[in-house]
Length: 128
Length: 128
DNA sequence: AAATAACTTAAAGTCAAATTTAAGTTAAAG
DNA sequence: CTTTAACTTAAATTTGACTTTAAGTTATTT
Image 1 (cartoon, rainbow over the protein chains, first blue to last red):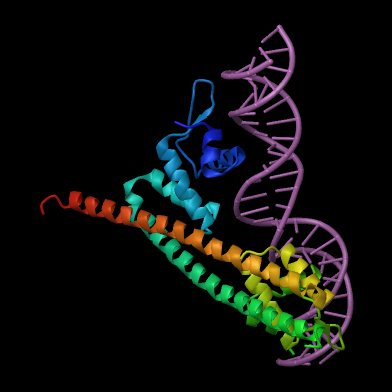
Image 2 (cartoon, chains in turn orange, cyan, yellow, blue):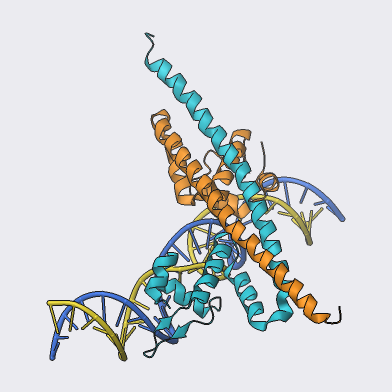
C-alpha cells in the first residue's frame, strides 16, 4: 500500500495529477485510510503504469476514460477492450514510422549544416 | 507560387494555422499579390515542411521560433542552429525509444486479453 | 504546545496551440 | 449585377491536460 507521495515518486506524476486522474475516472479503486487520505494498492499502481503507457503514446484522457469505463463494466467488454488496444497499438506503430521519416529529414538538415560550415571554414582560411 | 488553399492541401494544415504560423514568426517571407493575398514560394513551402517535421516530432512553436529567428540573423548562427537540430534529433531518438518500450507494454496487454478471451470461450462451451 | 509538513476538497487559473468570430474586401460564376 | 467563394484582419474563444489556490484537517517534529 502506497501514499500519494510514494506513488508520485514511483511514477513521476505530481500528486495533483494523481488526484486529477482519479477525478476524471481513469484511476478507480483508490481507497482511503481512517483519516480520509488516499491509499494505493499494488494493483492500482500497475493499472496506473498502463495508463501512463497509453497517455505517453498519445491516447487522450477521454479515450483512456472510455477504456477504464469498459473495464468497470466487466467481461462483456473484453472483445471491445482488446480491439481498442489493438487499434491503439497500430496507431502507435504508425506514429513511430512517421516520426522516423521526420527524423531522417532532420538528419539530412544537419548534414546540410555540416556542408555549409565546411564551406564557411574554407572561406575563413583563404591562405590554405 | 501557391495560394493559401493550395498550401493547405499540400501540407494538410488549415489556412488559419498557416496564418497563425506566420503571425508567431515561424513562417517568414510569405509574399502578397496585388490585392494583398498570401503567395507562397517553393522555398517557403520547403521551409514549412521542415517546420512540420520539427513540430510533429515534438518541438514547441517557441523553439521553432527561436530557430527561425537564428536563420534570419544569418551565417553567424550556423553553429548554434546545427547544435539545436542535433539536440532535437537526440530528443526524438530518445522519444522513439521510450515509445517503443511503452508499445511493448501495450502488446503484452493485448496478449493478456488473448489469454482471457480464450479462457472465456472454454467456459462458454463446457461440452467440448 | 506550537510550528511545520502532508494531506483533503472544490473551484479557478494556466498554458500551448490553435480555431473561431466578426466585419470587411476581392474574384469568379450564373 | 448579384450571389457565392475565397480571401483579409484583429480579437476572442476553445481545447486538453493539467496546476494552482483557498480554506481546512491531520501528523510529525521541536
